[in-house]
Structures are given as structure tokens and as C-alpha cells.
Amino acid sequence: MKAAYFDTTGAPDVIRFGDVPTPDPRAGEVRVKVLAAGINPIDTYVRSGAAPMPLPKPAITGTDFAGVVDAVGAGAQLEVGDRVWGSNQGLLGRQGTCAEFVCVEEKWAYPTPPSVTDEQAAAAALVGITAHLGLFHRAKLTHGETVFVNGGTGGVGSMVVQMAKAVGAKVICTVGSEEKAALVRELGADLAINYKTDDISARVKEFTGGTGVQVWYETLPPADLDKTVELVAPRGRIVVMAGRAARPVLPNGPFYVKGLSLMGFAMFNMTAEEQRVGADDMNRWFVAGKLVSLIGARFPLAQTAQAHQLQEDNTIRKVGTLTGKIVITPTE
View (cartoon, rainbow, N blue to C red):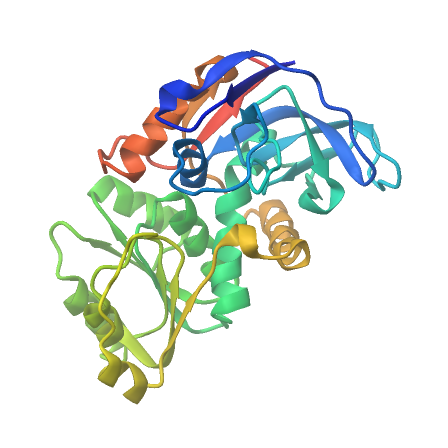
């Protein structure tokens, strides 16, 4: 089969495109004909070596997938022809999804609703499950609360906006342009703040009547926890899930006096059972029209290295040339 793979970690140009053996599913696995795969920042960290973890050789890149089951291993409950989507591949020794086929443990595969395209499912996989884990497993968001999220048009941020609205919460988010502000309003945001021109603190205080937000979902490496703690309501929750090298100072006094909670998580450390809760909700919201994936770029499988470069330029260098997710289409 054709695949995008690397033999050693490094820059995007270590990714090669070529033939590798087509895998056979082991017990409890299904083989999926990949019709869409997704690129995420974690894929670039694994490829570069910034996130060290066990890698097969060669290592196929890619975390997210959507496609059709074409073979099943012993004991698997899914059947040939079932449409499925999922994430958690290309991590912790598992082969990735930027290939014509991928073998997946059945616990990481979710049914794709008939009305949902493979591109939509693949683009939502990691970012959607991540958003869900932070909002509901960690922060226990409930109806009527207010959420602040940095980067409302980002992969995780756009999912946070929509999921919070799906359960009846209010959403404040930051954006970098009026075009992005219009986009997040379409997704349901109650307030879009342009971080380049607006006073974030003043706008948040005005919107919340000075009480602050109940949940602060930080999708960026945290740099100013003083501002965050100031803008979170008493007994509020701060969620962090990015910034491996970030070392922000914690304003200990106001943090404990307000009774705040600071919680972090990495999606790939969460169990399959914990993640499936999010996948089930996502499927329901997809069907109800409450969840859409923002797709910013598409690449054929042969150009996966270029896709990595685009992701890295926007994640690390902040060049601002990508809104939404990158999708790889192995069949093109």
C-alpha cells in the first residue's frame, strides 16, 4: 500500500511517500480503508522528536482517520463495510493513518453516521474528543455557565465553541480578525474578542457583569495566569492542554482565595472508555447539525510532508495561513 512515513525524526522533509506492506488485522483489530486522515500539531511533535514516544519502523504519520472496514481480526464486532472514524493512531507505538489502510484496535473506532462525510469525521476526531474531555470530563461544564476559549477558529477552539453551545452554555472566544469573528458567531459564540485590537479583560468583565467566567479553556501555551485568574469566577475551572515548555507563574493568593481549580490533560493519556463518551456525543451533535468541522486545507497523500510544514508553520511560527484542520485524502 502507499503511505507517508519516516525512518528517523526530524524536519517535515524526513517524511517519505512510497510503498509499505499492507497490514493484516490482529485479534481485536479492524483494518480500515482510509478515505480521509487528519493532521494535528501532535503529529508534527512526534515526527520532529519533540514528543518522544515509541515508534514503529518505518513510522507512518497521522492520528485521525475515517473510512470503511475492509477486514476484521478475531473477536472484532465490527463488520466489513462498516463506516468508522477515530483517532489515537500514530501514537505510543501505533501505526498512523496517512496510508491507504490502517489497522486499528476496535476500541478506538466509532461508527460514522450516514449523514456525516469522511472528511468531516476525520477533521473532527482528535480536536473534538480533546475539546469534549476538557469541557466535560475535566471541567464538568453545565447548562448556563460561561466558557472562555482562546482561539475560537482553531481546531480545538472551534469544537469548544460548538460543544459548549450544544449544552446551553455561553461562549466568549478570541479571534484575530473580523472575518474570524464572523465565523465564530456562525458557530454560536456569544462574544468574539479581537485580541489584536480589543481589551480582553474589559470585554470579558463587561459581558459577565464583572463576575468572570466559570470555565477558562486555554488552547494556547499559558503565559499570563494573572489575567486568567482575574477573569475566572469564584470556584471556576481553568483547563490547560497545550504548551509543553510553558512555565507560567501562578498567582497563588487570588487563586486559592477564589477557590479555583487548575486541571490539565493530554488526550492520548485518557482511556478508550473516557474518549468514547465524547465520540458518542459528537456523533449525536453531528446528526443534529450542532457540530461541523472547519477544514482549512486538503492535501493528497503524496504531499503529506507539505501538510506537516503548513501545520508546523501555523502552530509554532504563528504565520496565520491556516483556519481549521488539514485533511489528507489517500484515495486521490
